[in-house]
Picture 1 (cartoon, rainbow, N blue to C red):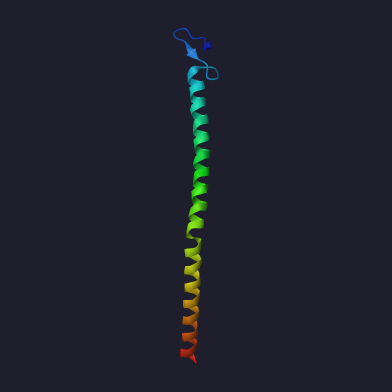
Picture 2: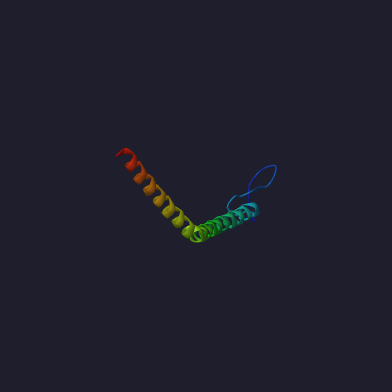
Length: 79
């Protein structure tokens, strides 16, 4: 372990000290965890999209039919 010169105490150098190495290790672990969290979120998003895709399409078709029906009723009222 390297120490800088100080009259009253030892000062640990940032780049070679135990605390710096521990901090680097924690930062690497955080980066790995963030990346894994992104991967999990992406996977869950894709699974959710696949799960509800048919329901969404069915709803859109129903709304389209409903709107077309309403449009035709409006045209009959206006003419």
